[in-house]
Structure formats: structure tokens, C-alpha cells
Length: 268
Ligand code: ADP
Ligand code: MG
Image 1 (cartoon, protein in one colour):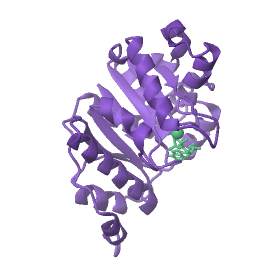
Image 2: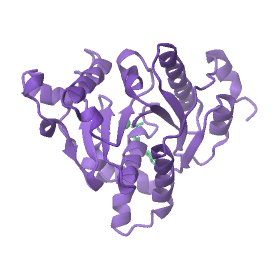
Image 3: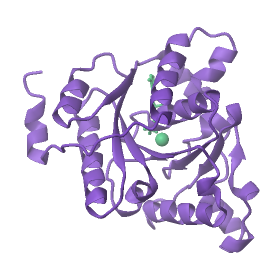
Image 4: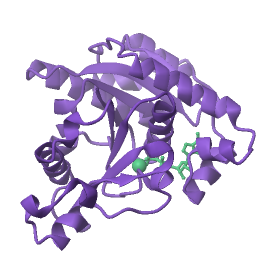
């Protein structure tokens, strides 16, 4: 099953995705996490280091795709999770989304798209244009990480629009729902999920241990191994992970008009 995780920049996509990847591995699944952000740090918390990106690997192989083997591309990290980073073009030139499409082609050529129980794409979603929407063409489910903020939910709505658009173009991707992150309150998240008829999959609180674990290159599961009191967090990640691997049917969201978005939360 392929799951694409989207969300506004900085909302915690990579933090949530990598913790879900480890949770799924701990639940017995063979997991591949693909970082699809030119920032290239999606899998830092799994590998414990910045791994070579697809762009760097292609460069090192003089763009001879056929000379690239799975072991050149995939790194095994914590809890046996496999990771790939697409990387991006040089700042200010090229198209980051194009790199995502090329990565998928490379993974398909190496038969890696069918070698895992779960593939998680971690995709930036401020603007889901062209290439950054590519994972939706492969995904069975998409979910959105969002804080309890207007701008994060505005991006979430755009991602919902992309899901509707992909279905209209014949792709069969369903919206699994919203994962609240860095949330002390949830009222806007609840309004949005109710209005769009989408599930609220879970809520991860703002936690200093998560912020620190990210800097140190760990998921909270590694902190748990080290004896830190993070059970509340690992339990929530495992609960969301268990739900996603149970293959929920998902929905086609009832998207909000752009102008309506500005009215939706008034009076909250
Ligand atoms: P994105 O991938 O969406 O750009 P990141 O996962 O890199 O976002 O997170 C951005 C920053 O927010 C990171 O420094 C991370 O440590 C911090 N962060 C993410 N989730 C939480 C949380 N639940 N509590 C505290 N800090 C968080
Ligand atoms: Mg990220």
C-alpha cells in the first residue's frame, strides 16, 4: 500500500512521517519512506544522517539510470525502515517535482515499488503543482499533516483539491484524513474535517522531546529505547499507524472554496 503524506512546509510532515514509518515497522510491516522535498531531511531521523539524494546518485552515475542498483539508492535505518531521498535541483532552477517523478521511475525500474508492505511518500504541499502531485498518481491513500492554524488548513484544502482532481483524471487515490501535529487545541482541525467530511486521524501534541529528537536525528521510538518517558507520543503514532495499515477506505473530500475558507473559521 502506498500512502502520500502532504502538508504545509514546516508543519511537521517529516517528523510525523518518520515516526509513522517506524511505528509501522514495529507493527511488523516492511516500510520504505521516500522524502520528496528538496530540503532532503525527511529521513534524517530514520537514517541518523543526511543520506545521498537521488539527484546526487544520478550525478555520480553520470545519469546512467541502468547502472544504478537498489543498494546505491536505498538506505536501511532504524527499526529496519528503508529510506530514499529524492533531493532537488539547485536552488532557483529546475523543478523539484520533476525529480519526484524521476525517482518513482527509477524505483519502478528496480522493482522497488512492489517490494514493500507500505511505501510512505513525504511530500511538501504548500503548492501541489505538477510534479509534487505525482505521488498521488501512485498512492492508495493520502493524508495531510496540519497544525490547528488557518494557513496549514488552507494548504490541506489545496491538497484535498488535488485529490479530487486526480480522481477526476482516473486515479484511485482516497483521502485518509488529517493528522493534527504540534497542537494544543484542535477546534479549527475539527471544523475543517467536519466541513470536508474527512477523518481526523489523530493529534500529536506540541512536545519539546519531539523538537529535540528531530535535531538529534531520532524518532521518538529511539528515545523510548533510551528510557525517556515518551510513551504517550509513541502510543499515538502507533495508533495512527495501525489505522493506516488496516487499509481504511478513505474519502473523496468535500473541498472548501477558496473564498469560503476565509469564512469557515470565523466565530471559532
Ligand atoms: P516539515 O517536514 O513539514 O517541513 P518538520 O518535520 O521538519 O516539518 O518539522 C519542522 C520543525 O518542527 C522541526 O524542527 C521539528 O522538530 C518541529 N516539530 C515537528 N513536530 C513537532 C511537535 N509535535 N512538537 C514540537 N516540535 C515539532
Ligand atoms: Mg520535511
